[in-house]
Amino acid sequence: MYNPAHPGLILKEYIEGMSITDIAKRLGVSRVALSRIVNAQAGISAEMAVRLSKLLSNTTPNFWLNMQADYDLWQIENTKTFSIMPLFEESAHSVKLA
Image 1 (cartoon, one colour):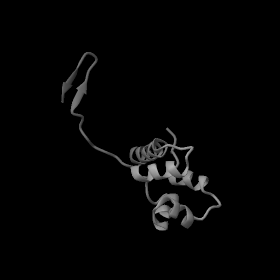
Image 2 (cartoon, rainbow, N blue to C red):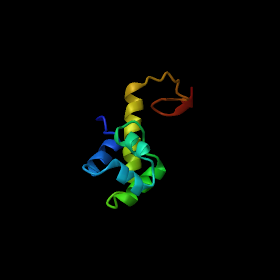
Image 3 (cartoon, rainbow, N blue to C red):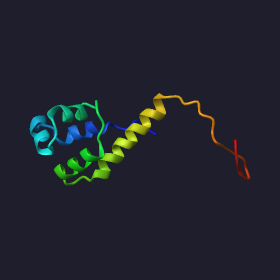
Image 4 (cartoon, rainbow, N blue to C red):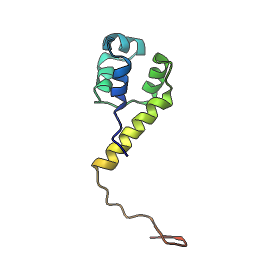
């Protein structure tokens, strides 16, 4: 799987040429909060996803949340190592408790 873009970078493309302050006011959030998102320093919450979908009516909350989930999963799967013993062992014919 490819490294998906942070959703803030996609948002930055949507609002290119517009004032962060103006967009933040329209969204009902602080300029700092919006700036952190468009600079990929903060993620998009469910509430922000709803706000963005109302601002950008050609998008949905799921569009923003799915993009955030894809980004988060890729980051975790490709930057962290987990040493976790599986709870179940799979064999050709059954699954049994490890």
